[in-house]
Amino acid sequence: MNPETAESPFVRACRRLPVPHTPVWYMRQAGRSLPEYRAVRADVPMLTACATPDLIVEITMQPVRRYGVDAAIFFSDIVVPLKAIGIDLDIKPGVGPVVDRPIRDLAGVGTLRALDPGDVPYVTEAIEALTKELGATPLIGFAGAPFTLASYLIEGGPSKNHDHTKAMMYGAPELWHALMGRLTDITLAYLRVQAAAGASALQLFDSWVGAVAPADYREFVLPHTSRIFAGLADLDVPRIHFGVGTGELLGLLGEAGADVVGVDWRVPLDEATRRVGPGKALQGNLDPAILFAPWEVVERRSRDILAQGRAAEGHVFNLGHGVLPTTDPGQLARLTDLVHEASAR
Ligand code: CP3
Image 1 (cartoon, rainbow, N blue to C red):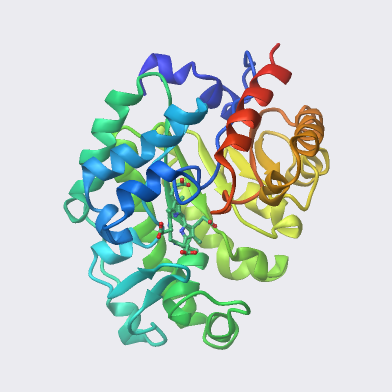
Image 2: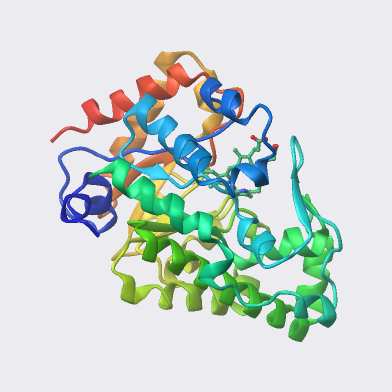
């Protein structure tokens, strides 16, 4: 990592070191809430954009220019590495990832071959260009975690109850672990490609794992997520682990080995600090829907989160989940300034 980036407030907060102000970025900061995003995406399908370095660079930079956030997040999607190894899938506007032939047996699992850096040359090219353009501002690389990827692959698309996913997890544990093992290999390789190209932090999104009870997380998910974080330990870049509805899982998410645990809006950060335990930084956790309320409400709630975040050994301000598409970018611009000013030490 370049020395300036290593000293940035974001990287220092992830490492639980003193910072001049609480760093802030937003999950899904690059995307549909920005008019400049909608303009460049007008005629380009999502997965085409994700494979076009110039577009990746432009879209990743848009929120950095507009808001002055403390980190950029690589513009891509969690299904990009699966597409890259030949899985037939698409991202449908307003729906999300859809898979042509859901994976529900050993033959299906067999189609998940290992990922090689040569499968994603556009990722390497875009990250190399971005790290030059970003200078001292860190770039966060990311991947979907095995459970969340498995849910899309098994269900064939977004799912409320994860019926088929849980049917396999509970009913065919050997098949489940075979699938999760392959996804772990792919995810680990994909994150390492991003770090090798210059990403200065890595976030694992296990967005839907909140559907799993703690004992089942320990048995069916933790062995795999632990292997991912252990496999990144030598890289010396902060590792962030995030999921939605994970109040009961916060301790286990920390146990999996990340440096930073992302918290959704349901658990206050002081309580999350207690649940996660010592030796971790926290990231979060303003309800993204609060941005639809008047500014005074956003300000009061954000100051509360900054105060609660002081309980943690390190705090990165973020939303509790991604920016909602109809969010007013003006609210995020004001919020970024507020976090910087209110937390200045
Ligand atoms: O955070 C960022 O700014 C980086 C970009 C990013 C996208 N997807 C771009 C995107 C990131 C980090 C993701 C991760 C992702 N993708 C997750 C994990 C994070 C989370 O929100 O929990 C998940 C579950 C997905 C799967 C996915 N892809 C969904 C649910 C959707 C939205 C479908 C819709 O249209 O409502 C997508 C598509 C997607 N990924 C869009 C963007 C900007 C919208 C595509 C468009 O502009 O048409």
